[in-house]
Image 1 (cartoon, helix red, strand yellow):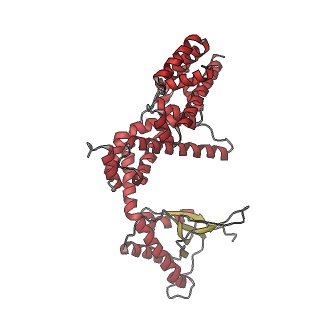
Image 2 (image 1 turned 45 degrees about the horizontal axis):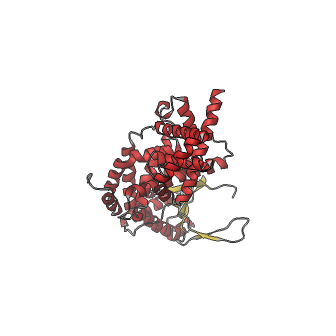
Image 3 (image 1 turned 120 degrees about the horizontal axis):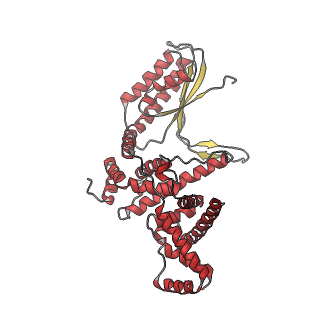
Amino acid sequence: MAEKTDQELMAATGRGDLDALGILFDRHHARVHGLCYRLTGDAYVADDLVQESFLRILKYRKGFGARAAFTTWLYRLVRNVCMDHLKAEATNRARTGHMVLEQQHERDPSDSGEADPRLEALRSALYGLAPDKREVLVLSRYEGLSYAEIADVCGTTVGAIKVRAHRAMRELRQQFEELERANEV
Amino acid sequence: MKCEHAVDLIIDTLLDALDDGQRRDLAVHIQSCESCAAAAERMGALWEGLGELRLPPAAPDAGITFRHRLAATRWQQRYVPFLRAAAAVALLVIGGAGGYLLRGDGPRSVPAMEGSTFLFLVRGEEPQAAVSGDTLVREYQAWASSLARQGHLVGANKLMDEPGRWISAPTSGETRMRSDVSGYFLVSAAGYDEAVEIAGSSPHIRYGGTFEIRQVDPVN
Protein backbone atom coordinates (compact mmCIF):
# COMPACT_ATOMS: atom_id res chain seq x y z
CA MET A 1 0.00 0.00 0.00
CA ALA A 2 2.98 2.29 0.61
CA GLU A 3 3.45 2.86 -3.13
CA LYS A 4 -0.06 4.28 -3.57
CA THR A 5 -0.60 7.95 -4.29
CA ASP A 6 -1.98 10.34 -1.69
CA GLN A 7 -5.28 10.45 -3.56
CA GLU A 8 -5.54 6.66 -3.54
CA LEU A 9 -4.74 6.54 0.17
CA MET A 10 -7.37 9.22 0.86
CA ALA A 11 -9.92 7.23 -1.14
CA ALA A 12 -9.07 4.18 0.97
CA THR A 13 -9.33 6.28 4.16
CA GLY A 14 -12.74 7.43 2.96
CA ARG A 15 -13.81 3.79 2.77
CA GLY A 16 -12.78 3.35 6.41
CA ASP A 17 -9.30 1.91 5.86
CA LEU A 18 -7.41 3.44 8.78
CA ASP A 19 -4.14 1.77 7.77
CA ALA A 20 -4.17 4.04 4.71
CA LEU A 21 -4.39 7.06 6.99
CA GLY A 22 -1.43 5.69 8.96
CA ILE A 23 0.63 5.69 5.76
CA LEU A 24 -0.43 9.27 5.00
CA PHE A 25 0.68 10.17 8.52
CA ASP A 26 4.12 8.61 7.98
CA ARG A 27 4.44 10.35 4.65
CA HIS A 28 3.43 13.85 5.72
CA HIS A 29 3.66 14.27 9.49
CA ALA A 30 7.14 15.85 9.50
CA ARG A 31 6.03 18.50 7.02
CA VAL A 32 2.81 19.08 8.98
CA HIS A 33 4.81 19.41 12.17
CA GLY A 34 7.00 22.01 10.50
CA LEU A 35 3.96 24.01 9.46
CA CYS A 36 2.31 23.73 12.90
CA TYR A 37 5.54 24.81 14.57
CA ARG A 38 6.03 27.74 12.21
CA LEU A 39 2.46 28.90 12.84
CA THR A 40 2.42 28.47 16.64
CA GLY A 41 6.08 28.73 17.67
CA ASP A 42 5.75 25.87 20.16
CA ALA A 43 7.19 22.43 19.45
CA TYR A 44 5.02 20.57 21.98
CA VAL A 45 1.87 22.28 20.80
CA ALA A 46 2.90 21.41 17.24
CA ASP A 47 3.15 17.73 18.24
CA ASP A 48 -0.43 17.84 19.52
CA LEU A 49 -1.70 19.72 16.50
CA VAL A 50 -0.14 17.16 14.15
CA GLN A 51 -2.19 14.43 15.85
CA GLU A 52 -5.29 16.63 15.80
CA SER A 53 -4.79 17.42 12.12
CA PHE A 54 -4.63 13.79 11.06
CA LEU A 55 -7.60 12.87 13.23
CA ARG A 56 -9.45 15.73 11.55
CA ILE A 57 -8.56 14.17 8.19
CA LEU A 58 -10.44 11.12 9.38
CA LYS A 59 -13.40 13.23 10.47
CA TYR A 60 -13.61 15.18 7.23
CA ARG A 61 -12.44 12.44 4.85
CA LYS A 62 -15.73 12.57 2.95
CA GLY A 63 -15.05 16.22 2.10
CA PHE A 64 -11.94 15.36 0.12
CA GLY A 65 -12.66 15.42 -3.58
CA ALA A 66 -10.97 12.67 -5.56
CA ARG A 67 -9.59 15.19 -8.05
CA ALA A 68 -8.38 17.69 -5.47
CA ALA A 69 -4.70 18.15 -4.74
CA PHE A 70 -4.09 16.39 -1.44
CA THR A 71 -1.39 18.77 -0.24
CA THR A 72 -3.56 21.88 -0.77
CA TRP A 73 -6.42 20.21 1.08
CA LEU A 74 -4.00 19.15 3.83
CA TYR A 75 -2.55 22.67 4.14
CA ARG A 76 -6.06 24.10 4.47
CA LEU A 77 -6.99 21.60 7.14
CA VAL A 78 -3.75 22.02 9.12
CA ARG A 79 -3.98 25.78 8.86
CA ASN A 80 -7.51 25.65 10.28
CA VAL A 81 -6.41 23.40 13.14
CA CYS A 82 -3.60 25.83 14.02
CA MET A 83 -5.82 28.91 13.75
CA ASP A 84 -8.47 27.25 15.94
CA HIS A 85 -5.77 26.58 18.51
CA LEU A 86 -4.44 30.13 18.40
CA LYS A 87 -7.95 31.59 18.71
CA ALA A 88 -8.74 29.36 21.69
CA GLU A 89 -5.45 30.33 23.28
CA ALA A 90 -6.20 34.04 22.77
CA THR A 91 -9.70 33.63 24.22
CA ASN A 92 -8.27 31.77 27.19
CA ARG A 93 -5.78 34.55 27.78
CA ALA A 94 -8.51 37.17 27.59
CA ARG A 95 -10.68 35.23 30.06
CA THR A 96 -7.88 34.88 32.56
CA GLY A 97 -7.12 38.58 32.40
CA HIS A 98 -3.80 38.01 30.65
CA MET A 99 -2.54 36.24 33.76
CA VAL A 100 -1.36 33.21 31.84
CA LEU A 101 2.34 33.41 31.39
CA GLU A 102 3.74 32.96 27.93
CA GLN A 103 4.89 29.38 27.76
CA GLN A 104 7.26 28.16 25.14
CA HIS A 105 7.50 24.42 25.77
CA GLU A 106 10.58 23.75 23.80
CA ARG A 107 11.70 20.16 23.88
CA ASP A 108 15.20 21.37 24.42
CA PRO A 109 16.35 24.98 24.22
CA SER A 110 18.93 23.95 21.65
CA ASP A 111 16.15 22.56 19.43
CA SER A 112 14.73 25.91 18.45
CA GLY A 113 16.42 28.72 20.34
CA GLU A 114 18.63 30.77 18.05
CA ALA A 115 22.30 31.03 18.98
CA ASP A 116 22.63 34.16 16.86
CA PRO A 117 20.99 37.12 18.69
CA ARG A 118 19.95 38.66 15.36
CA LEU A 119 18.11 35.49 14.40
CA GLU A 120 16.58 35.33 17.88
CA ALA A 121 15.31 38.89 17.38
CA LEU A 122 13.92 37.88 13.99
CA ARG A 123 12.20 34.88 15.56
CA SER A 124 10.65 37.12 18.23
CA ALA A 125 9.51 39.57 15.58
CA LEU A 126 7.91 36.76 13.56
CA TYR A 127 5.97 35.47 16.57
CA GLY A 128 5.05 39.05 17.49
CA LEU A 129 2.98 39.28 14.30
CA ALA A 130 -0.75 38.63 14.38
CA PRO A 131 -1.43 35.00 13.32
CA ASP A 132 -3.23 36.03 10.12
CA LYS A 133 -0.19 37.98 8.99
CA ARG A 134 2.35 35.41 10.14
CA GLU A 135 0.59 32.64 8.23
CA VAL A 136 1.05 34.44 4.92
CA LEU A 137 4.80 34.72 5.46
CA VAL A 138 5.08 31.14 6.72
CA LEU A 139 3.12 29.65 3.82
CA SER A 140 5.23 31.58 1.33
CA ARG A 141 8.67 31.38 2.91
CA TYR A 142 8.63 27.80 4.20
CA GLU A 143 6.04 26.10 2.03
CA GLY A 144 6.73 27.99 -1.19
CA LEU A 145 3.08 28.78 -1.90
CA SER A 146 2.05 31.54 -4.30
CA TYR A 147 -0.41 34.29 -3.38
CA ALA A 148 -3.18 32.38 -5.17
CA GLU A 149 -2.38 29.15 -3.32
CA ILE A 150 -2.21 30.96 0.03
CA ALA A 151 -5.58 32.57 -0.72
CA ASP A 152 -6.99 29.11 -1.45
CA VAL A 153 -5.60 27.68 1.78
CA CYS A 154 -6.80 30.63 3.87
CA GLY A 155 -10.18 30.84 2.17
CA THR A 156 -9.87 34.42 1.01
CA THR A 157 -8.96 36.47 -2.05
CA VAL A 158 -5.56 37.02 -3.62
CA GLY A 159 -5.98 40.76 -3.04
CA ALA A 160 -6.55 40.26 0.68
CA ILE A 161 -3.47 38.02 0.92
CA LYS A 162 -1.35 40.59 -0.91
CA VAL A 163 -2.40 43.31 1.52
CA ARG A 164 -1.65 41.02 4.46
CA ALA A 165 1.76 40.12 3.05
CA HIS A 166 2.68 43.78 2.56
CA ARG A 167 1.61 44.67 6.11
CA ALA A 168 3.27 41.58 7.56
CA MET A 169 6.67 42.32 6.02
CA ARG A 170 6.53 45.98 7.06
CA GLU A 171 5.60 45.02 10.63
CA LEU A 172 8.24 42.30 10.70
CA ARG A 173 10.88 44.81 9.70
CA GLN A 174 9.66 47.37 12.22
CA GLN A 175 9.52 44.90 15.12
CA PHE A 176 12.90 43.43 14.20
CA GLU A 177 14.53 46.86 14.13
CA GLU A 178 12.97 47.78 17.48
CA LEU A 179 14.31 44.57 19.01
CA GLU A 180 17.72 45.19 17.47
CA ARG A 181 17.81 48.68 18.97
CA ALA A 182 16.70 47.33 22.38
CA ASN A 183 19.48 44.72 22.26
CA GLU A 184 22.08 47.35 21.46
CA VAL A 185 21.12 49.47 24.49
CA MET B 1 6.93 55.14 -9.17
CA LYS B 2 6.14 56.20 -5.61
CA CYS B 3 8.32 54.74 -2.86
CA GLU B 4 5.30 53.31 -1.02
CA HIS B 5 4.38 51.30 -4.11
CA ALA B 6 8.02 50.34 -4.63
CA VAL B 7 8.14 48.80 -1.14
CA ASP B 8 5.02 46.74 -1.97
CA LEU B 9 6.81 45.51 -5.10
CA ILE B 10 9.94 44.70 -3.08
CA ILE B 11 7.79 42.51 -0.84
CA ASP B 12 6.09 40.94 -3.87
CA THR B 13 9.56 40.15 -5.24
CA LEU B 14 10.44 38.27 -2.07
CA LEU B 15 7.20 36.31 -2.29
CA ASP B 16 7.97 35.61 -5.95
CA ALA B 17 4.87 37.39 -7.19
CA LEU B 18 6.19 39.91 -9.74
CA ASP B 19 6.08 39.64 -13.49
CA ASP B 20 9.06 40.67 -15.63
CA GLY B 21 7.67 44.11 -16.41
CA GLN B 22 7.16 44.94 -12.74
CA ARG B 23 10.66 43.70 -11.94
CA ARG B 24 12.15 46.00 -14.54
CA ASP B 25 10.16 48.99 -13.25
CA LEU B 26 11.23 48.25 -9.70
CA ALA B 27 14.89 47.87 -10.70
CA VAL B 28 14.79 51.25 -12.44
CA HIS B 29 13.27 52.90 -9.36
CA ILE B 30 15.75 51.30 -6.95
CA GLN B 31 18.69 52.49 -9.04
CA SER B 32 17.58 56.05 -8.53
CA CYS B 33 16.27 55.85 -4.94
CA GLU B 34 18.68 55.22 -2.08
CA SER B 35 15.88 54.78 0.45
CA CYS B 36 14.16 52.03 -1.55
CA ALA B 37 17.51 50.40 -2.33
CA ALA B 38 18.18 50.23 1.42
CA ALA B 39 14.67 48.87 2.06
CA ALA B 40 15.19 46.17 -0.59
CA GLU B 41 18.48 45.14 0.98
CA ARG B 42 17.05 45.17 4.50
CA MET B 43 13.95 43.17 3.61
CA GLY B 44 15.99 40.76 1.53
CA ALA B 45 18.17 40.08 4.57
CA LEU B 46 15.09 39.50 6.74
CA TRP B 47 13.69 37.09 4.16
CA GLU B 48 16.99 35.19 4.07
CA GLY B 49 17.08 35.22 7.89
CA LEU B 50 13.63 33.61 8.07
CA GLY B 51 15.05 30.71 6.13
CA GLU B 52 17.77 30.26 8.74
CA LEU B 53 15.42 29.98 11.74
CA ARG B 54 15.73 26.57 13.29
CA LEU B 55 13.01 23.97 13.10
CA PRO B 56 12.69 21.51 16.02
CA PRO B 57 12.10 17.90 14.97
CA ALA B 58 8.72 16.25 15.41
CA ALA B 59 8.26 14.01 18.46
CA PRO B 60 10.13 10.75 17.77
CA ASP B 61 7.16 8.64 18.89
CA ALA B 62 4.58 10.61 16.86
CA GLY B 63 3.83 7.63 14.61
CA ILE B 64 3.30 5.28 17.56
CA THR B 65 1.05 7.80 19.30
CA PHE B 66 -1.01 8.22 16.16
CA ARG B 67 -1.40 4.45 15.73
CA HIS B 68 -2.69 4.23 19.31
CA ARG B 69 -5.17 7.01 18.66
CA LEU B 70 -6.26 5.37 15.44
CA ALA B 71 -6.76 2.08 17.26
CA ALA B 72 -8.91 3.87 19.85
CA THR B 73 -10.85 5.56 17.06
CA ARG B 74 -11.37 2.26 15.28
CA TRP B 75 -12.67 0.77 18.52
CA GLN B 76 -14.95 3.73 19.17
CA GLN B 77 -16.35 3.64 15.62
CA ARG B 78 -17.21 0.02 16.17
CA TYR B 79 -18.57 0.12 19.70
CA VAL B 80 -19.56 3.62 20.88
CA PRO B 81 -22.84 3.78 18.95
CA PHE B 82 -23.54 0.35 20.33
CA LEU B 83 -22.71 1.59 23.87
CA ARG B 84 -25.06 4.51 23.50
CA ALA B 85 -27.86 2.26 22.40
CA ALA B 86 -27.18 -0.12 25.28
CA ALA B 87 -26.97 2.72 27.81
CA ALA B 88 -30.26 4.12 26.53
CA VAL B 89 -31.98 0.77 26.94
CA ALA B 90 -30.55 0.36 30.45
CA LEU B 91 -31.70 3.84 31.43
CA LEU B 92 -35.19 3.17 30.10
CA VAL B 93 -35.40 -0.07 32.05
CA ILE B 94 -34.09 1.48 35.25
CA GLY B 95 -36.13 4.64 34.87
CA GLY B 96 -39.29 2.58 34.43
CA ALA B 97 -39.29 -0.75 36.22
CA GLY B 98 -36.37 0.32 38.44
CA GLY B 99 -38.39 3.22 39.73
CA TYR B 100 -40.89 0.75 41.15
CA LEU B 101 -38.14 -1.05 43.05
CA LEU B 102 -36.62 2.15 44.31
CA ARG B 103 -39.88 3.45 45.70
CA GLY B 104 -39.57 0.87 48.42
CA ASP B 105 -42.69 -1.17 47.75
CA GLY B 106 -41.15 -3.61 45.33
CA PRO B 107 -40.25 -7.13 46.23
CA ARG B 108 -36.49 -6.60 46.04
CA SER B 109 -36.21 -3.04 47.30
CA VAL B 110 -33.15 -2.04 49.26
CA PRO B 111 -33.01 1.24 51.18
CA ALA B 112 -30.67 3.77 49.65
CA MET B 113 -27.42 3.71 51.57
CA GLU B 114 -26.25 6.65 53.65
CA GLY B 115 -23.81 8.96 51.92
CA SER B 116 -23.65 11.66 49.33
CA THR B 117 -25.54 11.56 46.08
CA PHE B 118 -23.67 11.74 42.79
CA LEU B 119 -24.98 12.44 39.33
CA PHE B 120 -23.46 10.41 36.48
CA LEU B 121 -24.25 12.27 33.28
CA VAL B 122 -24.08 9.97 30.26
CA ARG B 123 -22.10 11.93 27.70
CA GLY B 124 -20.97 11.15 24.21
CA GLU B 125 -21.37 11.88 20.54
CA GLU B 126 -24.43 10.92 18.58
CA PRO B 127 -24.30 7.40 17.20
CA GLN B 128 -23.10 7.18 13.61
CA ALA B 129 -24.68 3.84 12.82
CA ALA B 130 -27.33 1.54 14.23
CA VAL B 131 -25.87 -1.50 15.94
CA SER B 132 -27.28 -4.41 17.85
CA GLY B 133 -25.91 -5.69 21.12
CA ASP B 134 -28.05 -7.88 23.34
CA THR B 135 -25.08 -8.97 25.39
CA LEU B 136 -24.03 -5.42 26.18
CA VAL B 137 -27.57 -4.41 27.07
CA ARG B 138 -27.67 -7.35 29.47
CA GLU B 139 -24.37 -6.17 30.98
CA TYR B 140 -25.82 -2.71 31.54
CA GLN B 141 -28.92 -4.13 33.13
CA ALA B 142 -26.86 -6.44 35.36
CA TRP B 143 -24.69 -3.52 36.46
CA ALA B 144 -27.68 -1.31 37.26
CA SER B 145 -29.47 -4.14 39.10
CA SER B 146 -26.32 -4.78 41.11
CA LEU B 147 -26.18 -1.11 42.10
CA ALA B 148 -29.83 -1.23 43.13
CA ARG B 149 -29.29 -4.35 45.23
CA GLN B 150 -26.34 -2.72 47.01
CA GLY B 151 -28.39 0.38 47.74
CA HIS B 152 -26.24 2.63 45.54
CA LEU B 153 -28.84 3.42 42.90
CA VAL B 154 -31.00 6.43 43.72
CA GLY B 155 -32.47 6.90 40.26
CA ALA B 156 -31.84 6.95 36.53
CA ASN B 157 -33.47 8.33 33.44
CA LYS B 158 -32.90 8.52 29.75
CA LEU B 159 -33.44 12.00 28.30
CA MET B 160 -35.49 12.62 25.17
CA ASP B 161 -33.46 12.53 21.96
CA GLU B 162 -34.89 15.81 20.65
CA PRO B 163 -32.90 19.05 21.18
CA GLY B 164 -33.45 20.67 24.58
CA ARG B 165 -34.31 24.32 25.24
CA TRP B 166 -31.67 26.74 26.42
CA ILE B 167 -32.52 30.05 27.97
CA SER B 168 -30.28 32.59 29.61
CA ALA B 169 -30.45 36.20 30.78
CA PRO B 170 -30.72 38.86 29.56
CA THR B 171 -32.52 37.53 26.47
CA SER B 172 -36.09 36.49 26.98
CA GLY B 173 -36.15 34.01 24.12
CA GLU B 174 -35.25 30.37 24.17
CA THR B 175 -33.02 28.38 21.88
CA ARG B 176 -33.26 24.80 20.80
CA MET B 177 -29.90 23.17 21.15
CA ARG B 178 -28.71 19.61 21.20
CA SER B 179 -26.39 18.61 24.04
CA ASP B 180 -24.27 15.49 24.24
CA VAL B 181 -25.99 14.41 27.50
CA SER B 182 -28.33 11.50 26.80
CA GLY B 183 -29.26 10.40 30.33
CA TYR B 184 -28.21 10.18 33.92
CA PHE B 185 -27.78 7.89 36.88
CA LEU B 186 -28.15 9.13 40.46
CA VAL B 187 -25.87 7.12 42.69
CA SER B 188 -25.30 7.14 46.42
CA ALA B 189 -21.65 6.85 47.45
CA ALA B 190 -19.40 7.75 50.39
CA GLY B 191 -17.42 10.24 48.32
CA TYR B 192 -15.95 10.95 44.92
CA ASP B 193 -13.52 8.03 45.23
CA GLU B 194 -16.30 5.53 45.63
CA ALA B 195 -18.41 7.25 42.97
CA VAL B 196 -15.55 6.99 40.50
CA GLU B 197 -15.04 3.36 41.47
CA ILE B 198 -18.73 2.60 40.89
CA ALA B 199 -18.66 4.42 37.56
CA GLY B 200 -15.52 2.52 36.58
CA SER B 201 -17.30 -0.79 37.18
CA SER B 202 -19.95 0.05 34.59
CA PRO B 203 -19.90 -1.39 31.08
CA HIS B 204 -20.25 2.19 29.88
CA ILE B 205 -16.75 3.07 31.05
CA ARG B 206 -15.30 -0.36 30.42
CA TYR B 207 -16.23 -0.09 26.76
CA GLY B 208 -15.02 3.46 26.26
CA GLY B 209 -18.01 5.68 27.12
CA THR B 210 -17.91 8.83 29.23
CA PHE B 211 -19.65 9.84 32.46
CA GLU B 212 -19.45 13.32 33.89
CA ILE B 213 -19.65 12.81 37.66
CA ARG B 214 -21.02 15.63 39.84
CA GLN B 215 -21.83 15.57 43.51
CA VAL B 216 -25.34 16.73 44.41
CA ASP B 217 -25.23 19.65 46.83
CA PRO B 218 -26.69 18.35 50.12
CA VAL B 219 -28.26 21.78 50.80
CA ASN B 220 -31.02 20.81 48.41
